[in-house]
Length: 166
Image (cartoon, rainbow, N blue to C red; front, side):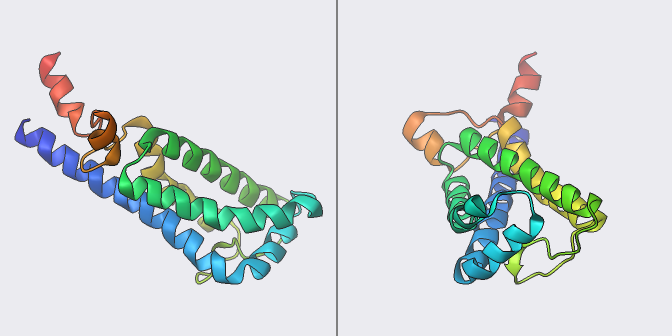
C-alpha cells in the first residue's frame, strides 16, 4: 500500500468516526428526554399522533446503533445508506416545517443544542450528513470489522490505488 493510500485510509477512518460521532451524540442526548422529543416530533405535524410516539422512542436508539456500527466499521455501506436516508428525512421535515411557517426547535440534538428550524439549521444538518454520505459512496474500512470479519476492501483508502492501476 502506497503512502498516498495509507493517508487516504486514515482520512477515511477519521471521516467514518466523524459520522459515527454525529449519530452517537444525536441519539445519546435524546434518550434521557424522550418524552420532550416526542412532543417536538408531534409539533412538526408530519406524522400522525399514533406514529409520532413510536418514532420518537425508536429514533434515538436507531441513531445510537448507526453511530456504533459506523464506529466499529460493521456493515459500513448499509449503515451509511440508512443514515443517508434518515438525513434526507430530517432535511425534508425541517424544510417542510420552515416552509409552513412553523417555528420550532429542530430537535436534532435534543435540548443540548436548541436551534430554530430555518435555512441555517438545514444547511448545518446537510453538512453534518456529508460524512455519512461519503461512507455510502466510499466505505472507509480501515480498522473496521467489515475488513476483519469479511475481508471487505477499504474503498476510501483504495482510491489512490485504483488511480495508479488505470
